[in-house]
Image 1 (cartoon, rainbow, N blue to C red):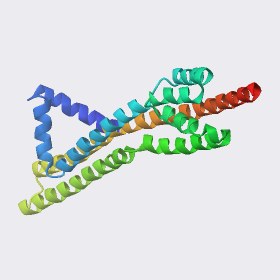
Image 2: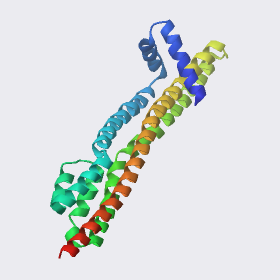
Image 3: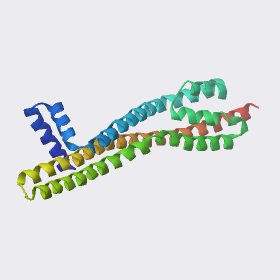
Image 4: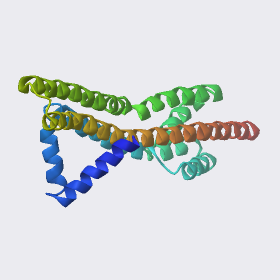
Length: 232
């Protein structure tokens, strides 16, 4: 991977010294042949899912500590209905899990706890939605690059056979063009892999926050239930 990055940086340096980075990349893209287009499609579609995932995770995130404090305060002052109102104003995953549990409080603490656990699993699947497509493009882009390289090598050897002469120029230019698809495929995969790892780390953090906050919610509901029994 370090070798690939070094090669890419050398290409950019060479491009800056000649016709500019963009023109140079366009030139190399055209030289890469037909396999460059599906690799480009992997990049575009992968980045589209990255944007979608970034927006969805941003909506699912919140200041968990502040939210828990607000819910506990609402429970103490206005009861379950007040806490549900606080949850309805928050679009985070934690709020959705809390809302599911609070709506089952009338059936008992055990029912509320089961609802929290069940909806927590559903919310986890929502958080992971779309990651499979980013992972797919990460896998496909290098494979397309390798396929383009193999096709390019076949064409290079066909040129050698047609020329009936192993000329350094024929061999070098043919192999150079053939390797372009591999280079671009690996670059696309590395770009998407960075985003993928970032999203996985962010989802893991959200899941931990949901689990910890759910325990605090159940404890708060138990205390609220005890207070009601004491008053009665």
